[in-house]
Length: 174
Image 1 (cartoon, one colour):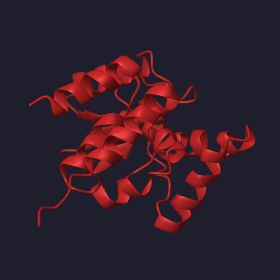
Image 2: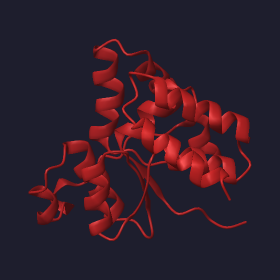
Image 3: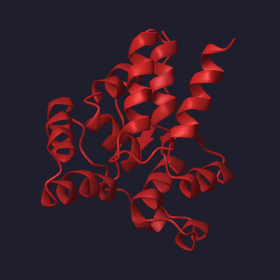
Image 4: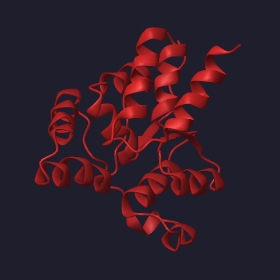
């Protein structure tokens, strides 16, 4: 069995997977996911403060999985990232990933994904996580289609419906 590369997640995929009640996929696919402190505070503390149910679900999942936030090291942030148009969570996610060997970043935000790739990092979004779960046999085709349909139609998930449709066509038109 191959060892999984280290995985670091930004807020977007955590929030979407919590809304869909699919956080277990992260553990099944990757074993452990590192979460920078700023991302943890955003998705858990700020989410609970704002009354989001998915934030409570994330807190319980992190406690049960025993995934603790990574405190990081702000002095490790490359100067190019300090000046980039990123929020703190994106910056900390990329910075943490840069300290790991061959990491995978989970991130949905377009600018953050571009900057991570410019740093030589591999990036996968929420849809990519679901596709990987399908390809590895963790979920079936019907489940994948149902999750994609829910993502495309929910107003509290900010993933472009056209992208969802395009990926489904690419995946199943072979």
